[in-house]
Each structure stands twice: as C-alpha cells, then as structure tokens.
Length: 269
Length: 273
Image (cartoon, rainbow over all chains, first blue to last red; front, side, top):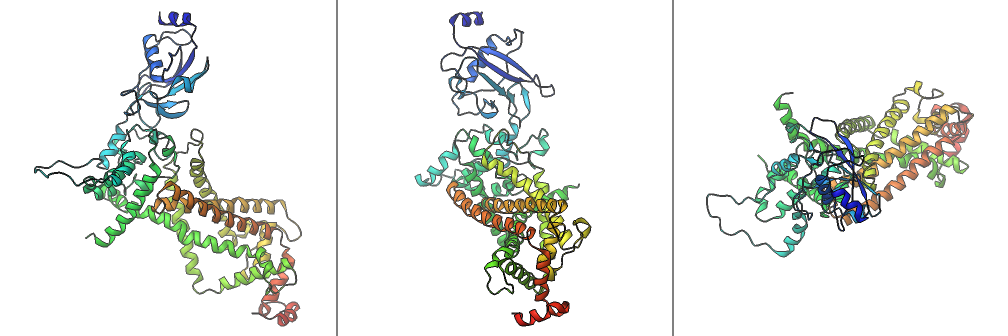
C-alpha cells in the first residue's frame, strides 16, 4: 500500500543496497530495496520505510532490516555503519546529500571490526571494554564525604571539551588498520585498544579529580595493545564525526608514557 | 605458554616497542646518513680538489676510496658492525611481528597518511631483503650471488662496487642491470622507511603533539628524506657508470705498498696525505 502511494506521488526513487546477515554464524548477502525518500530524509527513515514494507527491488518478500539507533542527532553513536564504503552515523547521513539524483544507490554495510548481531546491528562491547580497561571515568566514590572537588579553570576546561564529545561510536576503530576483529573476549586485553580510549585517557588525566587514576590509566596503555600499537595511519582523526583531535591525543599520551616510564624507572621500588 | 611468560612480555612490551623505535634512529638511521654520505662521495668527491686524480670522475673515485680507507682504519670497526647488525636484526624481527598485527585498508581510506602506513611496512620488507643481500655480497663475501662473481675489497672500493653493479668490466650486463635496479629499489625503500619512521617516531615519543607541530616536523623529515634520496640514487647511478679499470688504477695508486710496480712512480709523486 505504501509503495503504491509513493509511486502515484511521482517522487524520485533511490536504491538501498544492504549487506544482510541473519545471525553471527550465517553468511552475509546483499539485498536491494527501492525507497522514495521524504524531503530531508536520512538513512534511518529509509530503513523505517523498508520496515513498513519489506519487499526487495525485485519484488520478493523480505524482512525488516535490523539496525541500532538511539538519539537520531549524532550524539549517541549507536547508528554507526559503513555507508558507501565509509564509516559514519546513519542518522546524520542525509539522502539529499549522499544520493541527490533519481535512481542513486546507497550501499549500507555493518561495521567490519565488531561481531554482527543481525544485519546492520553490531555488538560494540569491545569498545566499552576498552573504557573499563583504562578506567575512563572520574573516581568520586568514597565512604567519606570528600567535599567539593578542585576548582576547574576555563583554560583547562576548553581543551577538554572537544575530547569529552566522544560518543564511543566506533568510527575511529572501523577505519583503523591496527584495530581488527577479535571475536574472542579473551583477546581484548591484548589487542589494540584504539584511538577513542587513548583520547579518553587524555581527557580524564587532564581532569583535576580524574587524574587520581593517571598512573593506572597510563600503565594500562603501556602493555600489549596499548598506545605503542598505533601505526600512525591517522585514519581515526579523518573519520571522527566529532572532529576530536585523536592523533594529537595519541601523541600526548605518547609523551605522557615516555615521561611516566622514565620517572618510574628512577623512582619505583 | 605459561602465565609468567605472558606477564614478562606484558611488562617488557613497552620497553621492546620503544627500543624498536629507538634502534631505527640510533644506530640504524644515523648509520644510514653516514653510509650514504660516504657512498655519494663518488659524486660529490668531484669537487674535492685535494683528491689524487686528474679529472672529475677520478676525483670522486679517489675521494670514495679515501673515505672507505678511513672507515676501515677505525678502531673497533667489527664491534660497530656487529652492533649495527644486531640492531638491524632486532628492528626487523620486531617490525615484522608488529606488521602482522595490522591490516592495511588503503582502498577504503585512501588518505596520504594511510598510504604512508602501508608503504612503511612494504618498504621495511624490501629494505630488509636488500640489506641482507647487500651485506651478504659485499661484506660477507657471498660472491656467488653477484653477477661476475666479484668480491668487495675495501682497498679497491669503487672498482669492486662498480663491477658488482655493472656485472662486467666492459659493459653493463643484463644481470648487472637487475642488481642495480634492486639496489635502486632497495635504497629508495630504506630512505623512505627512515624518513617516514623519523616522522612517526616523534609522535610515538610524544615530541610532536599538535597537528601543526607534526606538519612542521614532517617538512623537516621530508627535507632530510629528499637529501638522502638524492645521495642514495646518486650513489647507485655513480657506481653504475664508474669505469672499473680506471677506478682500479686510481685505487692502486693510493696503496703503493701493496700494489704492482706500475703505479709506484705516480704514487710517490702524488704522495699520501
């Protein structure tokens, strides 16, 4: 019914070529769907159209495409996928920009570095595990009332702000040649941790309360899979939707671990 | 694979990675600079008016021989060489190990930096093969790998090197050209690998933090790379077009005590500095 309405309205068609996979252990395959985007449509609204009428371009009955999404305004990172070969958020991917002409094709694929749950929906647990591995938080828990934290000055807040906009979306990891699939959870502590976590360590080590865990975080980044595993391909900074200076964070942490390791050599018992 | 072993690796991991970075610069990179400066003296030596030769190519040959003789008279040369070989082996083994942890994706993300990432690994492999061939043939005397079967002699530096690159004294043979081409690719890879590695090392150690600083240091590394590349290419071309007969005459004149009588007169008049 939806399709017949759309055809009558004379709006343009675009084609979505989607890499589908029923489950982690099933083989992936492409399926194409024709949709008629509304003005201002994004990739998610096209996927919603398909969900309303899951019929492929060749007229076969299919199933709604599974995907992850949350905020729909590029701050949660959940809807990250590979669109026309490049990783980005599907909510902020506007059809009028990426497929401006009638008959244009958009290719949607799940991120390749994380296990696929179904279709475009991936399991990003390893990404969050990296934040735990580096204690990427401000420690405020205590059995005593420790009173207010130290005063934060604007000149220290400002450089931290952009680092704090990281939404753990996974773009930097998807584009990184050093970050590769590790389906086995046991390998996560040895495999490259990725730019996002290194940048979060920089953020929390710059924070006056957060820096209580500075040494712990730096030592977590000195072992296998830490900051030394960066290969300086610098793809991370180019695909980051928040324009976080990830390569500067990596260099800053490089300096921090240089200083930390020398200091440790001279002071540790 | 016990837990203790893994624990030791984890503990030493940072040190190993930083030693890998360090050895690329010291001693390997520094040696590369000196080595290419010496080798390119076959060209820049033409400007050396104190060289014992009559024409410009001859001055280059004589200067190169003078440099090589100086190096071969250095005290503790073998210790320096073994240190260098050990550093290269360490850098290469760890480098190959690290390279296997990555998976290049230049097709999807064709950025310049990403291409450099891929090239850094590729040039590392090529440079390693080249260095092995280079040391085996011209230092360890594996002459069966050299067309014409010449063995390097440090008292006849330019002439034996020219023979190794040309394949024959009379003309450049096909096999000689193949060796020269391998030298060209090998030195190009080594120089790129060093210049790019110097750029990334500054990030690794945390010297260049801001993007602007990384760009500035990149200009310095590119400048050094271009200079070294010119010296490397100049050396290969210079020795490929060196006349081995003529070079041998000049070299013999510089070692009167070990050579046949025919050059003694000339050597006496010129004198050794």
